[in-house]
Structures are given as C-alpha cells and as structure tokens.
Image (cartoon, rainbow, N blue to C red; front, side, top):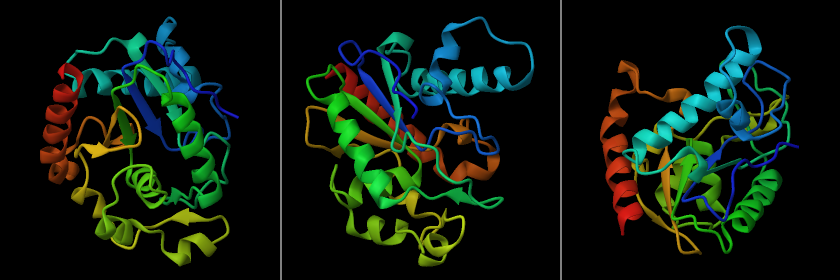
Length: 220
C-alpha cells in the first residue's frame, strides 16, 4: 500500500494522483509519486532516475500552477487509489474500481480534515470523474455522464478505463469546484501530460484557468 507524502499540518496544496505504479512496471511506490526521491540527490541513470523524474515533475508542476507561491514542503501528495491495480492493456488507462475509489475519497477526506490545505489539485479525467460521481465536490451531470467508464473496459480482463466521451475533461479542467471542507478542488491534467506538448494544445486555456484559480485561492 502506497502512503501519502507530506505534512497535513503544514501543506497548503494537496495533489491527488491516480494509482501507485508506473505504467509499465510492477514496482509500487512507497510514497505517492515517489515524492521522497525529490529530496534526495538526483540519480544519474536507471529506474531510480525515472522515479526521481516523476517526483520532480510533480513538484515542478505545482510550482508552475501556483506561480511559485508554494514551497515543496507545503505540498501533500496522495493517490485516489493507493493499492496496486492490474496493469491495463497496452495504450489503455488502468481502471480504478468504484470500491477502491470510495476508499480513496474517504482517505482524502481524512487527510484534509483539520489541515491547512486550501487547494486540492485533482489529476486526470478518471480521478475527477470519481470525485464528482461520489459527490466529493460539485457535480456536473454532463461531465459525469461523458466521463463514465464504458462497460467494455470495465468487463475486460484486465479492466481498463475508457470514458463515454474521450475529451470530456475539457469541460471541467482548470475550474474551481466547491467541496465539503474549507478548500477548493481544481481539476488538472496528469503530470505525465506536463508540460503540454503540441498535441495537447486544446488544454492551454484550461492550464491558464487553473493557474488563475489556484493563485486566487492561495492569496485569498
């Protein structure tokens, strides 16, 4: 079981990822996003370098989205699913089952309870689907309908996530969503899509919106 990384009593931003394993590896991170590697000397090669790279990418993304207002030790990281899931077929996205998503939502609620967190950065379309479908933040019925997993993927062995509408995330990415606590959820692309490449240019307005919303929330 992968553990969250960071201090809830000091963190201002919570980053919620997807699941604990690299896409093509059976290695499960001890801490979400291998975040502890960021505070070590950078490895020069091999798997350790890739783990460090993932951790560094997350902290760099947070720095960018917060316009440098948040230090690395003010970030708390976890996943919606912190248990290892069966790898998805090639070029598919692993499915987070509803039972695991419910556990994840409960764990997130525990992390932010009585914490100093002001912003939750929720990565990826599937994570945001579950947060809304399970009523953790403002529901958008159209997004929930379009992002719902297709049954063909749910029933596949191993299962995979394929939404009813592939680009449903454009509808909500970057928005500021009300939640049960004194914080706001902002949907963002997964760190694997960061920084944006030309094929992701449709999301440029979403990134700008996320930066504006996050900055405003941190200074309010």
